[in-house]
Length: 430
Image (cartoon, rainbow, N blue to C red; front, top):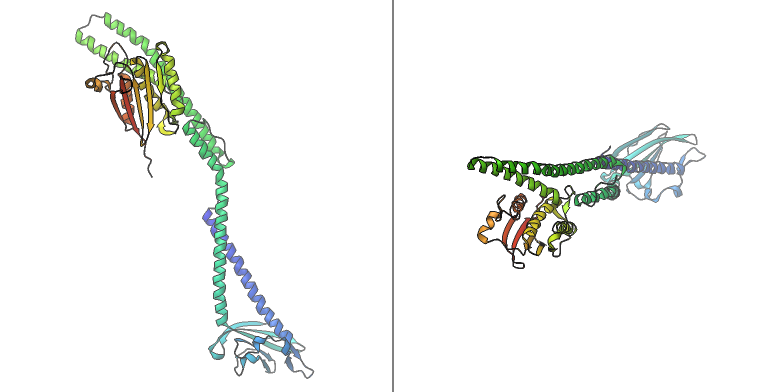
């Protein structure tokens, strides 16, 4: 395919060639017309003498030293000179009929002349007609013509560039649809791209294939993790029961129990992921769209306790955070709050230079001195209630991955524990 630069250069070259061809044709035609007019003014009287019809001569040739001259020289050396030469003379050659000679030479008053000598035969008489033009006015005309010509060429080139730009933009407008669809795929509004223009259908087709493959792999991986976690819970319970039945020293029993607890924590974490993570596959997070679904799921899980799980006014902006990560983070925070709440759980999300989330409950709360222990993996204040502990440790890890902060305090509105998370918006280079 020819590049745009080559197209512009080729178009300009063709335009210039056309313009110069027209100028050359015009100049040749003008000189030929002038010579033919002078020949038409020439006649031979009955005595065989050459004469010029005064009425047929352009007045410029009557004006002394006007810079426009002609000399008609017959075969016997007789000359008919334009009055514009006054008493000056020009060196003119004798040219055979049908021949043409062009040259430059000096003229009256230091003028530099362009001369054209052509041989003719009329009325049985052979003669040479030499036409001369002063180059100074012609050079000025040429300079003016060059300025005008270059201006016209510049405007023509500008028009060509603008037209080409319009054509390119009009052609690329079809790609804007593909760009918009990519944004919608990123936001979760679309699962596949439309095929688009014929030229890019192979690209969009391959992207659709990769998107479908990625979604299938993510779905299979999530299902496999959930299935594996569920499958391991039963054998793990048997191992814990068998460990209690074994007669082992206290230190060995404690060490084995600790390892089993560690496995239980990992399994619990993957079960939480399977329960709270969605199926978006990398789409952006829209709180007003995605949070209500999570709250409905929690209401179903804790419907036996009649909890009031509410949220304030949720932002409807599409935020640059992964949809699945945010659902997992909020799911863990809300799940912990529901386990310790008496009647109410409240979620607030606000936006400024960062996304600020706060989850509060009306439970017993946590003393300030013991709050740091909740952020340690597996740390729990009540071993009988699988509440604050693993979930907050998972949240802490995710918040750290996003470069954010997490803070535990007493809720001023509900009286229980309030967990606040601040996630700064990622900065894109440039």
